[in-house]
Image 1 (cartoon, rainbow, N blue to C red):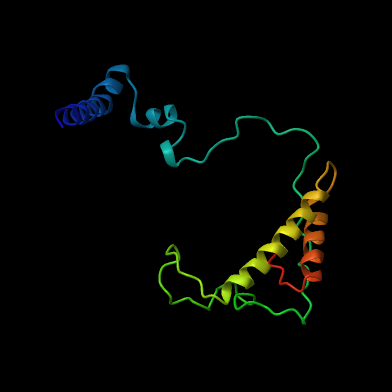
Image 2: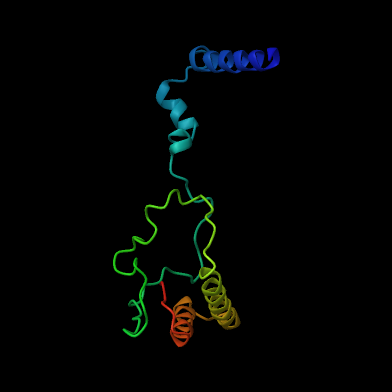
Length: 149
């Protein structure tokens, strides 16, 4: 405990002396310390440490891919806000699953694994993320599942 108090007093004293005495002795004004700190301390926006070069440029976002009407949509499909189970406690609480939920979770996990495997097989130099997105969309639709992209 004594060591912690000593350390805290030392840090506070050092901070006080740096803020009050040290900069004044060097002729450093308040604005110049801000410049020394890089423009605003911890909350300052980060600056790039390298010059951008090469042929890579920002792309454009393509049109949203449609989901066939025959595929059942989840309750959050229209506005992005889940309604089912919204009042069942905190999100971080682990809740036991009902026995009828387990087989559905296995099916959805299998579908996700198959679609991810298909997307991974597509990855190679020169392929665009738009074409991978289209493949994932198509493979998910083939499995009568809702695409959340």
